[in-house]
Image (cartoon, rainbow, N blue to C red; front, side, top):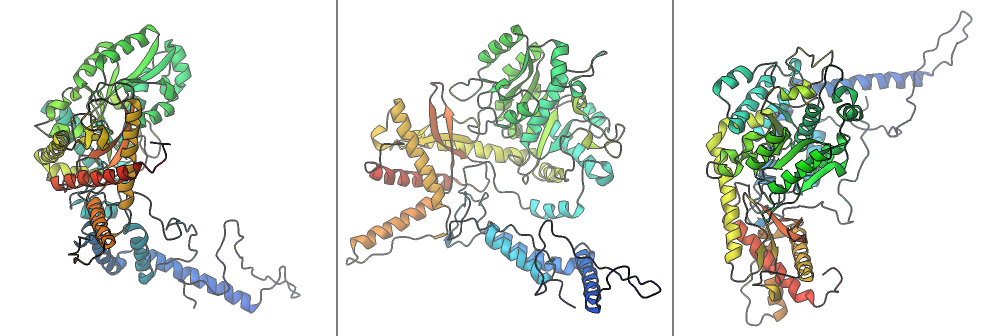
Amino acid sequence: MLSVLQLRADEKPARRGDKMPECETAVSDEDGDSGVSVESDDSLSLCNDDSREDEHIDKLIRELFAESSASGEKKLDEYMGQVINDFLQPKAETQTPIYASQPQDETGLSTLEQTTVPRTPQVGEGQVFEYMSHLKTHVVDKSTRVSAPSMIGHMTTSLPFFHRPLARLVTALHQNTVKVETSSTTSNLERQTIAMLHREFYGHPETFYEEQALNPSKCLGIFCSGGTIANISAMWIARNKALPATDDFAGVHKAGLLSAMKYYGYDGAVVIGSAMLHYSFKKAIDLLGLGDDQLCLIPTDDQFRMRADLLEAQIKKFQRDNILIIAVVAVCGTTETGSIDPLSEIGQLCEQHKIHFHVDGAWGGPIVFAEKYRHLVSGLQCADTITIDGHKQLYTPMGLGTLLMKDSATIKHVMKTANYVIRATSSDLGKYTLEGSRPAAAMYLHAVLHILGTRGIGALIARGCSLTRRMAQHISDDSSGSFQTLHMPQTNILLYRYIPTDLRHRANFSEQEDARIGWFTREIQNAQAALNDGPSTISTPSSSSPSSSNEEQEEDSERCEEATILRGGFVSRTTVVTTQRRHKDAFRVVIANPLTQWENILATLEAQKLLGARLEAKETKLPLVGR
């Protein structure tokens, strides 16, 4: 029999739309005439071969799902364990790049451009290993080193080791938490985890959690795939709550936005938030049928926090103009600057004017765990809804967002049911979530809360905030004046920029000078990222003999400089609008990785100084366009 793992020599891969071959059976009448053409013996043999081959393929495929595959799985686990170890702990003698952009091969094309699906199953043990090896070479080896201590440019960091075996368990259990019938125990684990978070953020009495935590008719919050879905869900709740059903109106959730606006007599509807609001709210307001123009952004102060005085004035103006305010959104830890809006003041305004108050705490919400910095989030408990991302400062794997609700009845405004699952009388959590099928990702957060505890999480948060403030102070104290901070960090995100030598030790700059500073900052960040996209062995200057040429010594020095730059790792960048209405380009540093040390931060600054000096040396040779 032909191997099911190889195409026959005369077999061509099937294409979409191809007619599959059919095997006809000859039926003869009494005179021996056939009703159809009689297949030749060779043709019948081929059909029988195909049938036997299909049976063999079926058997092999099913073995992939059976317990009998455990031995092959064990070998694969050992191999993947080594791959993971090499990825997380590279060889000491090699400075592993960060790889913060898409890698390309020698032709300049992506290494993953092949789009043909194999026709024949590749199920042999050797072939599965071959696939995993391909994955290692073309995906793993050049994946972004988000856990590297020198990766201080984004919010994705290293994870505690227990998540790796836990991920295997989550996959093996393969629970679907949309309904209890496919998540008998993990549905209650979700409820328990939400209640644990709710305690830390809202702090209701013990009797509240005894009554509501596991009560199938209550819901203190939901899990979702991330902060974007949590924020969209919050705005969905706020809209439906603002335009509810009455005795003679079905409510916006039934009648739609146009009918609801007509019924309630409003001339428009808006969502109000900070000018530093996350982009997910543009998605939310678009999906709710309002459009981006109905997202009212309030200017910020010099520390990038929403101005409560301007918010109050805008609320009163909308009310005079008969405009419905669906929600006011405050940010607890903006993604660009880490700033925290004045939550208590905003909460009081919302309570006074009976407006839904949502806090996007996807990044900064977990500061509640850090005793030293908890005062920064005072007023968070006033929020009707709070977004928290587990995969940010609660150190869970990607894809874990939560939305907490102060009042468990709030979620009823978006409850949807079906006949075969998520019935009205069921305990199914899918009644309340925008997403349908969901994994039991709550196990990751459940583990963090139990293993790290409040003090452990708080220690990680406090460490990041302290290091970031130390970095800002170091920049301010640096006698070279190479950098300028754009704010004093409230949390663990810092914006700063490179200052060319001839502009240093000055407080103010013209628009043209600001543009030049922005050019330097962009070019340095681009160069630092590019140097982190290829393998490099750390070199040190050799002990050059007196007879060494100047060219050799210069090359040696250059190699050492590049190694220094690589050790500086990666930072991101952004553009912010200041109170002077100027757009300023800035380096963006996020310090949340528990593996990051002060030496990594100093190396980053040193690398940027070297790149800046190189640019200044070449600046006079560059065209004025873009500078």
